[in-house]
Image (cartoon, rainbow, N blue to C red; front, side, top):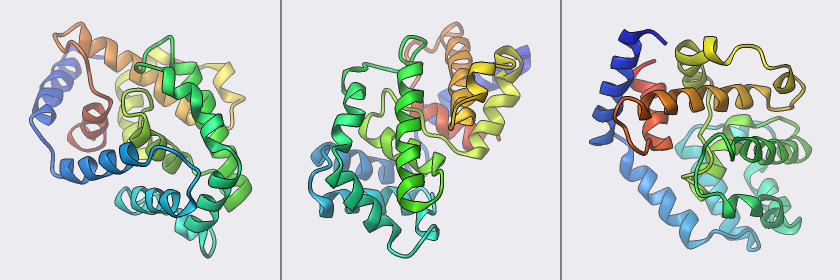
Length: 205
């Protein structure tokens, strides 16, 4: 990452930290997922799926008729809480937890393919993020493009990622680790995944 890009990264992070346009939309989603964290009541699960999907334009409704309800039924009837339970013990996103995050994201993606017929990479990351905002990075192609521009040369080719169903997410998380490291070495003590997401998606795109 060039020195000028590092300066832009740090300045942009501080700018976003003071607030962004949809921060209160995010607050509503944080509240909802905190109040109803489990996946046993299909109506509550449907509400979370629908709101995250529509607020963040993940477009899973385009996969098939009744997609949001179909996914809610599956998660509530197939012990989804057991699948994602390791995320409850992860205090944050770093080099020691990245592999677990990528693995569990992959498991969720497999479920969306089974239920909806599509690998819903972006939706899965966004949905998990609002349940575990300190541990799971949001993912979309736009932020990924920015992250790769900033840190891709440091990450390089990772054959172990190329075999994964969610290889792009794995590469994105690897880029994020480099970006977080750069922020920390330039005075940002505890970088927020949400602030970084807004920074990569909007400010530095």
